[in-house]
Amino acid sequence: MTKKQRAALCVEALEKEYTEALCSLQYEDPLQLIIAVRLSAQCTDERVNKVTPALFEKYPDLESFCNAEVEDIEKLIFSCGFYKTKAKDIKEMAIMIRDVFGGRVPDSIEKLTSLPGVGRKTANLIMGDVYKQPAIVADTHLIRITNLIGLVETKDPKKVELELKKIIAGDKSNDFCHRMVLHGRAVCIARRPQCQKCCIKEYCKTGSKK
Image 1: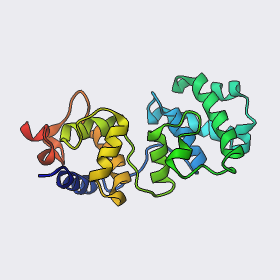
Image 2 (image 1 turned 90 degrees about the vertical axis):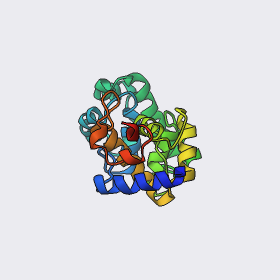
Image 3 (image 1 turned 45 degrees about the vertical axis):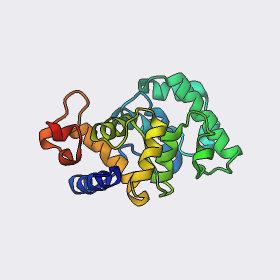
Image 4 (image 1 turned 180 degrees about the horizontal axis):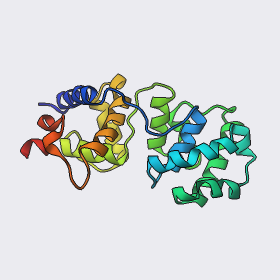
């Protein structure tokens, strides 16, 4: 079985198991999403979702973030960790979106990664969820599980992204990543994978051996 064939079978099985492939971060517009993703670094989505309602209530639009005091943002996002760096990035990101990109969250990987605090993982999430473009979001769940399955043989996020783009259909790629996160949380848990109840175990090089 080729990697492309294995990937297609995994995509199909995950679609049946997780009918809704949704981002677990709560947001109402692209700006809120990119800020929420920045907050999620080294932090759980659950924690971010508890923090963002008050943050977005105080700063409801781009201009309000541009005019915000970094110290005030810090107070609202303190529990997300690395709050000083994140607060600084959020304000600088907002200013750059306003002054460089005309007030619109940019729509290319290159432009997105030029924003403070935005790496390829965040950029791909925006491209997929906001602009509905083929995207591979190489988060920890995706990297770990695709290595276990045998779709990739690297832990480098960019290499994982590029390798998966070769074998997963573009119109399936973004939802595949969301479903991998759901699967990693529910079944293929890092320290105690439940292979006996895994919907893709027969296509997984690790699970099939068990």
